[in-house]
Image 1: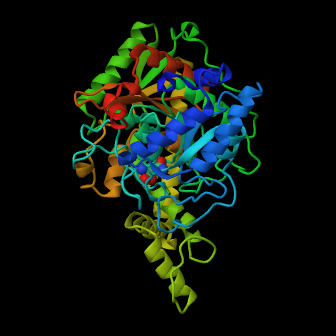
Image 2 (image 1 turned 90 degrees about the vertical axis):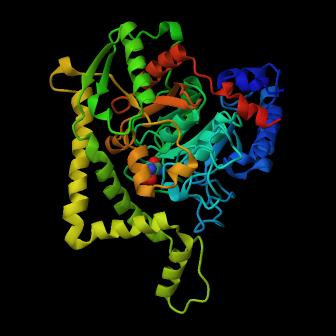
Image 3 (image 1 turned 135 degrees about the horizontal axis):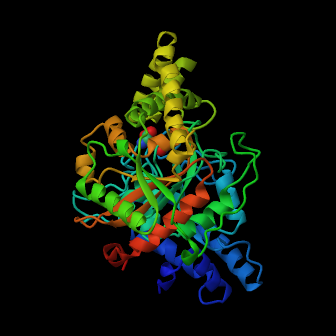
Length: 508
Ligand code: GLN
């Protein structure tokens, strides 16, 4: 019955066209599975009426041989910080628990115009602040690979787009949209054993994505394989007049050649030595080395490079994040939208009580710290200095991708995505949110600060049976090369998240 799950997006679309399955059947199964796998807590809200309506229309189009794109009839999920018209958009917060978006985020608008079928909105850390999907008012999301989903020793799915990653890894839908400010798409992709793309800043519109850090936020894509990721990117990327920060150059669809035509000989791969950092697990390190060796044996030129400001990136990110958060969160005052405290006698009291009730302690802490950094007496010392170091981090990447001396140039950087396999929830929550991010985002944040593309792809299972993934980064707008190399590695390692038998048994 679930044979369609083995298919990629293109093949599924082909089987809709030849009538061997239908968008309605696939949507029905997805909704059914989402309910059966409720224990994961991947979704904040399912959208069955919308899904069935979209599936019906899609089925009609296939019947009439007028399908709109390869994602026509494909089941998707969207993180709950993207606005979808007439659907609640909560950011997993009390502040927005009753907020119904009046318009569609561009990402969703493009997917729905291309025929995709929305199954629901996914769980996340409140306002996307976190790396575990443990700080949601709807409770945490469990990792599909956990040894035990019922007891107190299950694994986190990573965050903040943990719900999106979990929905894809569990096979509920083919693709999900996340957001990535410091790693929130790649981190849960890594822990859940799927592909997670953080595109070049400005390649995908942020219109309708509730902002966390405007200068770093990008919509991210989560899929089970590279080819599916390309399909989705081709639908959603490109300039948008509703987001002035999108890259104006028109977007040409990315084409990844068939495997036999991908030639990695002479490709220059850089291994940044600073990513070999404290806390890196032995198994992740081994995996990293093994893939570097495989690439070298196949003819790529693998060399060590240096990105000297890497270690500063956690501090810089933290300052800039909190400053932008302090400013972005100012809009939630109980007046225009979102939660409003009752019985207040002055406007100031209304603001204060609304915000005290509507935000969790993570959001409050970031607002307070951000405002502290922005005080007149601190502005230069923290905010301006952080901006200067951010530029140095970006220059580190430029110095390896486009160096003055071309002999030192590399095309791709290969690093771990996360330092370890997915932690146990009970261990993870012993740390503060700040410490969680400092460890979990070490390898992912630099790409956000430089605006360059990065992708996480699963490589193998650890001795505990949990996914271990690696990250590839390239120069700005280097997505096509990133996909080619990722596709090549994917074929070598043959990681299949559908082999996670436990989760398939759990739904029956
Ligand atoms: N963990 C980081 C934070 O909490 C990144 C979050 C994200 O990418 N949305 O800020």
